[in-house]
Length: 262
Image (cartoon, one colour):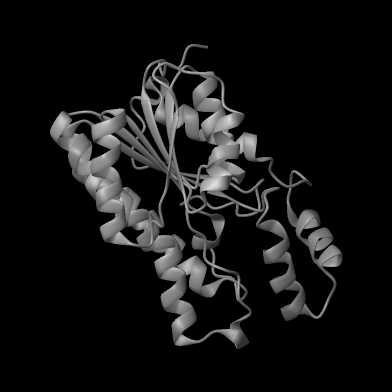
């Protein structure tokens, strides 16, 4: 199926590993040219090395998206050097899972900064340019923790819930200007961050990470964790012309753990 992404410019934050890198590889396979953003240059260089070649070439920029001023400069540079952004995919930033007894006011602030503001800092300057151009697509990779409260993920889940509302609201605001905004909510996924989350769960439950993983897996109707490529497949579809009438959608990708209507 031709998704109509050949020649499109896709900006991906958090693109050096995990779901972000899986998205980058899939967009590149569809013929898009990709600009990756992450904090570490070494990781970005390694990510670029595994992407299929594109014309114009893929690019990468090391930037901390928690810094709004740095992101503003980054977006100016990306537009100047790589051209207008057709698709923005936000994967950067993740709030740590923290047992509720370990939460502090600073932990709540850190969670919002790491997840909510890390996305907003990039969305704001890019979606405004998309609105001026009259076209564009934004896909936010958020997380299932924003849908149902969990005592192990209260601060991060709150940031995720705020991002869901922002995504739906921006979809309504920018739809008349030709910009679509959607989100996907992965559940447990086989990425580098999985061990950190399992360790936090294990501390709260006074159990081993292996036991916690087994318990989580048993609660998933599909009886397995997601692969990053599965998340990327949904992201690429939502960004494509084949999803041209989908906006404001929040897609659950947790293997059926939260069978909710709304």
